[in-house]
Image (cartoon, rainbow, N blue to C red; front, side):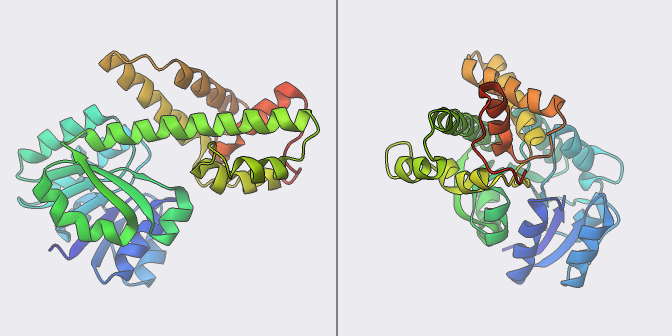
Length: 299
């Protein structure tokens, strides 16, 4: 079982994930474009690296958690990238949400050097990343998945090998569609009730015991009602994910009409300067349209 782990991308999700890997006794090498996160991990015992290449040189499995497809491409294929430092037999497990087609192409390039690749995106938000209870949906060769399972278990609670390379990405895009539409539906329902004079907190209590109960209602509704939109997952990143979903739908011939509408709602929030708010802030757009206040004014 590989014991030398590399982690590239120490953002809202990556930093706590890397800490959890380190806490399980793995030797960890880390790299991030900004240094404070690297310094924090180094104080906990990680090796601070100056490039993705250096991380690969000191790791058997290299984990990446980055914002978008171009970021992963640059880190894997670019100058001083992972493939410059990775030797045959090593594994790249990309835990970002990117285009599945990009994952497939990167895996093909990695294979030319004898390096295996998994696409293993995550779900659960920063709360689950901190708690080590993420859902991890992995695509790639079963042998590579088996070698990474113990590492994934340091970060996640539900870990599923969903198929060949790219399958993890398609599964994550399906997840992102569902989360976005549930957030929008929750916002519509709460705005409707608030306009009618119903207490939103009592609505959440009642709805949460019925068929409409869901993780979005359980995890996000309390913070929405308090007007807290510190990002567990940013609007601009969910906007990117919905773009990827719509691109995948176009390529595969799958119409995604409601996804397109919700994507444009997130786009409106981005244009309004709210791209760094939590994705549950979609309720702010609906409040403005209905001229009613559901949340407290803390935001």
